[in-house]
Length: 276
Figure (cartoon, helix red, strand yellow):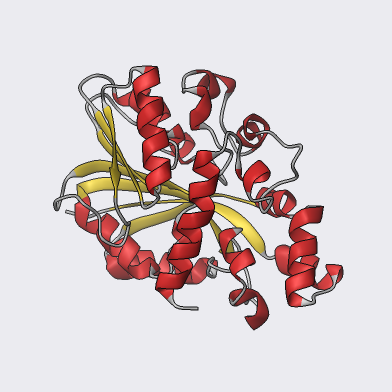
């Protein structure tokens, strides 16, 4: 499938999530069992009750695979960029940390997500947060502009990951930091999964091997790359009846084959800096 076709499907899928009131669990039935709330997911992947209580209720859609903010210390006055900001969940948590003198910018390619995030910012009185419609591979920001970049389970959805990392490097100030939670593979994906749009929207087939992910970051210029955490939680989240049935029906895979593949999926939290 062409990159443009993949992005179109992803936009449509996440646009539907943004227009609904629930998480991916309720809208796509790809990520979690339908009885799992966004709050439960967020607690399991590293957010605190305090985090949840400081953001507008409609900001948490349960779409993350980790808490990137748990592995970086923001300070007052920082300019923070969230790549794939969704309804603004991580942006609002970051906004509390950078204070009135700081600024948080959320970028998302889905118009419905941007609209929902802006509504949340207005309802929550977040004057130091803004949301811009744009693609991560072509960020609407000047060079050397932000102090910290965060991203949560989004890079795996981008077909051209090298360009995404290159753009992140471009807009980051020298000595600036990037911290990402994302999905990677510990082995090779079968071709049938690689070309499954169901698996792509569900954050599986767009993922790449962990070693390739780290190499791409290094190739665009990032240094001091470190993996802070690696967990199979997301695999547990993915294995549910609806998701399994869809892939079994569309791909003709057995449950054992599918479980073996999903066993290779991990969520990592990785950081790096842009050298001087």
